[in-house]
Length: 137
Image (tube, rainbow, N blue to C red):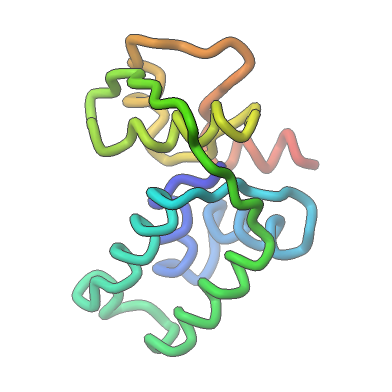
């Protein structure tokens, strides 16, 4: 699973761990999960023009990038609603998607909030992008 802040970070910086995580996905080294709520969140954040003023890619190029990223994702339907009660209620859908898709890891720049969930799932970890890259190597 790729949290939105990793995808956004990959677009905003020309180098770095976020970008390397996305590159690994595009090269087929890892297949991220996506579901309806995460898709809509990605789409909404990528549509924030003010956020991408300093982005080296044009809006059209960002849309092409997003389409390429989506092409390597595995779509997962969520049939059960779990509420891990994360500090940011808006992130609960990420854990729900991870559980529904049988993910072992959530790659995020916000591990602190995910690790403070009241409901925990054995075998599901949250890691920073650089930690994930070490595991992938």
